Image (cartoon, rainbow, N blue to C red; front, side, top):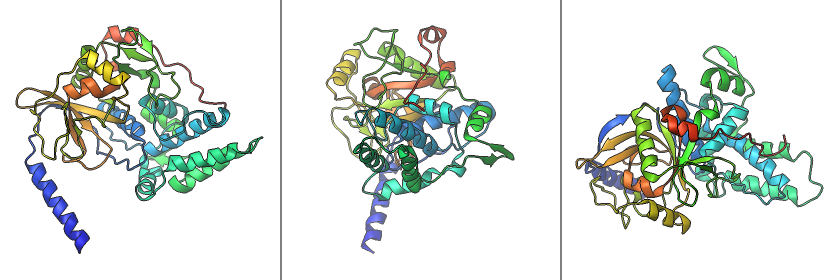
Length: 377
């Protein structure tokens, strides 16, 4: 009874807070399907990138295909495990990654509709377990490395341990009356090419209009070419993408002051965190290229979370917001939250965007993605 009372009280307070929200007026919001919950899996990179790909199928084929984020995460675990073993445990092994990892993995392994490899099993495990899947898998890899030569069948044991928790994906499945493998589904239905996307950033420790590998932990290969542009251009590219009908994935810091999407539905560049009820016209700090660089180099700004940006909106006083489709969990706007341009200017480390949304001058500057080898096959 006590637990029920507390839950009811929380729901009432949340509903009152929500009723007091001032919602920015939508300028444009693109069809993006329903919000999917990632739990404690730390696989936002897969959820956000998958959502971006799904929005393009809605745009071009008028089909809302629910793609399994878990299948992509599983296959990146396999690639990371191979590299971890070959490096004798000296490389990064955890659940975190970036959009370009998801793009690469979908190209190499294919994709599966969620109905055939459901995210819910891994999400449920992550929410109830005191030790997460990546830690369990890393413990296994460390045990393999304790004895040399290592067990030649270690990879089969690794996959078995993963699939005992998250489930075994099908080798083939029937979707809309036709049989597919994950790779044939990727090629025939998604018609997917990772070279159709580019990642763009804005930092001054590398020349503008050049390509470089951004020095952040989740960019663990340090191989992905980020196109570097001035901050005002990065912001304009993001706005233009939505206006031209393309969603994109954003790599953003959510640990800094002003991020309160879970409590209020807003991310505003404020000196201090605010409480549950927010006004989008709340005063914000000024942002600049110099401040952005200083906070990045002092390790204040981190690559915490990836989200699919699906729209733009404007407050009563004319402040522009990006509309987020966030996989972290329930929020006052049911997963569709608002991030101000000021917060974007400081805390958006990069965006991964369809090339079709870009002006030609950026296409000419962006390098094609390099061929990758996480490890020997």
